[in-house]
Image 1 (cartoon, rainbow, N blue to C red):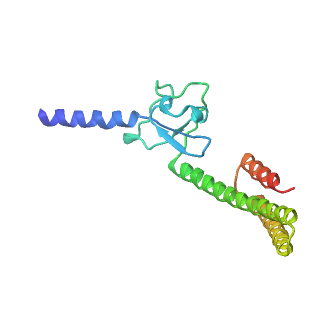
Image 2 (image 1 turned 45 degrees about the horizontal axis):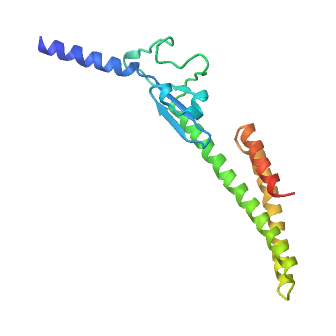
Image 3 (image 1 turned 180 degrees about the horizontal axis):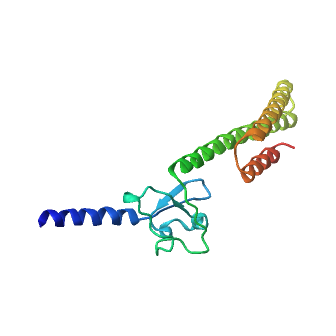
Amino acid sequence: MRLLLLFFILFVSLTTLTWAASYSCRDSQGTLHFSDNPAQLPDSCRKNVRQVETKRAFGYNPSASSADTPSESAPSVNLSAAEIFKEEADQKRFEQLRQQVEAVVKKYTDGVALKEKSNRRWHYGSRAGQAQGDQMIYDAGQEKLQLLEKLKSADISEQQHTQLQDLLNLGQK
């Protein structure tokens, strides 16, 4: 009898564990948050809540009308672990491109600042400062063209693409 009770408790505990749904969302900084309750996710990303698809024990999947599901206003999309890893890889790729864009913009603004500084303080070394500033501006322009080509073939969202192009155009006129 005890053995039967033990198996019953084990079975119930395993099946109740499978009832727990997992939810994820990505905030504005790109951090991926996970929770078993969508109300515990940060407010900043709650509108993008996705239900993470998990393998269920004994082939059982709880119904979509469960009380743990997000509200009707929050769209729910089932994601597999592979899709989540792909999403994280896409986010890393975007961050790398954004860092490259910021480096080009910094190089351009540093070149402009050096050139302006050399023009304000005219002395013998000013010509070298102007030439160095011109070279930095030229190099930044070449890197910008390379990044624009890379952006054309990059596997990022249209919003991210526009954001990076705006960053590139902000620093360089």
